[in-house]
Length: 300
Ligand code: NAD
Image (cartoon, rainbow, N blue to C red):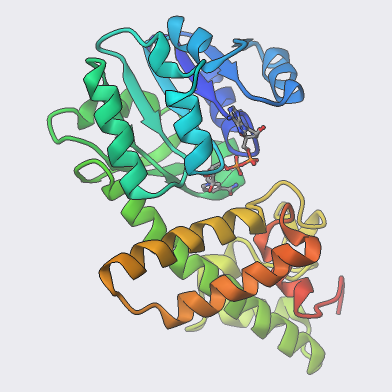
C-alpha cells in the first residue's frame, strides 16, 4: 500500500486515475479540481477533497497532477495556494499532464529546492486506458529516483517506461502525439473517402486493420461512427481526447521543433487543421471529430 495520494485535475483522465488509486490499494486519495462537480464525483467514489492544492499537499506524501496545460500545472505548484506552499520535504510530485519539457524541468528545480522529488510522467492510452488502469507512463526522472514512482503508477497503468532524465517523458509524449495527430487525420480522410465512394465503413476499417494502414487511430479508436463500440465516435465524440488538447500538444511540438530547427511539415499541416476545427467549435469534442469536420456522416 502507498501513502495518501493527492490528485489535482479530476477531468476525463484524472478522475479515472484517482478511482483506480482508490480501488487498487493506495492509502487513500485526496482530490482537487477547480470544478465543484469534479470534486463531488470523486467524493461519490469514496475519495476526499481539498479546497486548494496547498491544502491537498498538506495531507499527502505524493502529489499527482493531471491538468490541461503549462499554465495550469505551474499554477497548481507555484500559485499563491499552490502545492509548494505546504509540501513536506521528501515528498514525490508526479506530473502526468502533457506539457512543455522545459516547463517540466523548471518545475523540477522548484520542487527540488523544497527538498522533494519531481518527475514528468505523461501518459498514453486515452480515457479508456485511464478507466481500465492500462495506461503507459513515459517517465522523465533522475535514474536513482525512478523506482519511487513505480508502486503508484502501477495502480493506474500497465507499463512504466523510464525515458531518461527529467523532461524526457514529455519529449516522448510530444513525439507520440505528433504521430497520433497526423494518423487520426489520415484515418479520418480515408474513412470519409471510402464511405463516400461506396464501401461499407466496417469492411474498410477491417481491411485497413489487417493491412499496412493499421494504427491505433484505426484499430482501437476509429473516428467513423458505426465502426466500433465504446469509443468517442460511438457517443458523439464526447468524453475523449479533446481537439483543443491535441491542438495544444501540436503547439508544444511546433515550439520545440522551432527551437532546434527540426522540420515537421506534416505536423505543421496537422496543427493548422486542428486550429480550424477548434475555431469552428469542436474544441471539447474528441479529436476523432476530424472525420465529421471533413464531412463524414453518422452512418454509411
Ligand atoms: P480535462 O480537460 O478533461 O480535465 C482537466 C481537469 O483539470 C478539469 O476537470 C478541470 O476542471 C481541471 N482544472 C483546470 N485547471 C485547474 C487548476 N488550475 N487546478 C485544478 N484543476 C484544474 O483534460 P484531460 O482529458 O483529463 O487531460 C488532462 C491532461 O492529460 C492533458 O494535459 C492532456 O493533454 C493529457 N492527456 C489526455 C488524454 C485523453 O485522452 N483525454 C490522453 C493522454 C494525455
